[in-house]
Image (cartoon, rainbow, N blue to C red; front, side):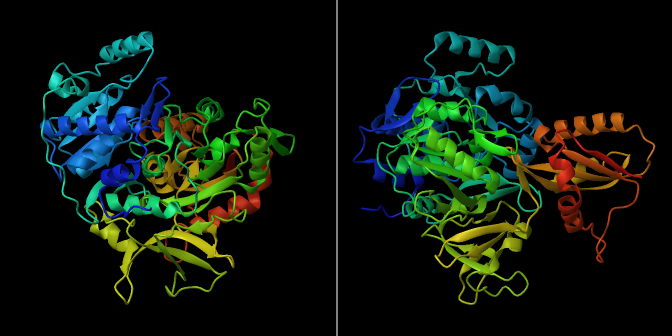
Length: 573
């Protein structure tokens, strides 16, 4: 019998688990232990008691910087029991980005894995929050590795002497600790997850916990999950909404969630083999790692072993559209490895607790993103008239339902740009994507109204690069466009207008690269650069004509890029 989603995330989890307490809930890449659902719930309850004693109360904003370990799972659900509002800070971000996110959300406390403490400790007093640390190696079986890790963190200053600031010491308290369980608030704020949005403007997305329950409930119509199945836990659960969704959907379906700290593309296949996963999700680059180039074709990678993925039933790609040139080879690779899976698609957004529609690879039409989540309403509209388009026509995606965000955190202006109400008073969110409904009721992904794109496994926001590069004195203006790449999905193409055509371009690029790495990351570096001494092409409203450059990339440079494996440095002087 399906459980009513109108309850807290933890209560929904507990209600779904009550008849499966002897099943394995969690495994970890750091340990050989299998943690049962009974043990997991016992630990969650203990974490809740300790955190309540520490002073956390319902409605408190608590930051979490977590990696994929069992302790992180206990922590997230314990905070839900108390009713804290959880903010997910990314361990991949630098101190400057972390500071910005703290200033936006103003947490009372931040609980962080110790190796990331250096990103927070300089801001504790100035931004008025306390910190509690826990060890990445808490569950590690290898004593030598554990001791080496702890010594390294002490060398780096990632520790606190006060026992009250160390989660391990706090958990040693075996005394009876009473705590007040949070009162359930329907569609109440429980989580804040960050997104760059359609323009690259950093925003916190306010989400309701019961909304996630509804997504999980609706997805059960699209995927037949069985208790005891192994679900690979590679997507970060601490700060990515898709990771939180994977965690909740796996545990609420009584699956074994195989936590791994290795989310890298290079080791994706090895983790699938190691965990004997039956369900796995990755971005297109993860699945592309199963194949390699042979002349002009993609073929299964030589490192694959026959029959090595025989347990894999569901293989889903998410985060960005797959490339048609690689899908057939990926399916051949899966078949060679003994898997019955065909690569499917997941489509979603941070603003809707992840998955909106899914093609499970087994029953849906290839080339579609499958069917919509049954607990969401979808309408496709003409972007100019906002009237619903006919079936088969391209339309701008609007979504309604309990999973839709409450709004952007303390940002009514940005919220008002995407939230609207129809004549009947129903609340809709414009996600800025174009879809097309097929005759079978499935959906095809058409493209984005927004400009951000994925390179490798990271979202790239062109506006951020453009703003950053215009701080360089040599740059008049710049526009960044995505260029299709069969391995990384897309790579940034910088179109730069310079004031002086006689500058030392080699030295300039060194400076450019250093700036981008320091403020953003290596994935944001240019795959291609085109220089011009003329101002960039503009539209009648004086804005740079981004579409002109996107079309120019396709029509003029496609063959040149395809045949070169090094950066194209083109100077139009």
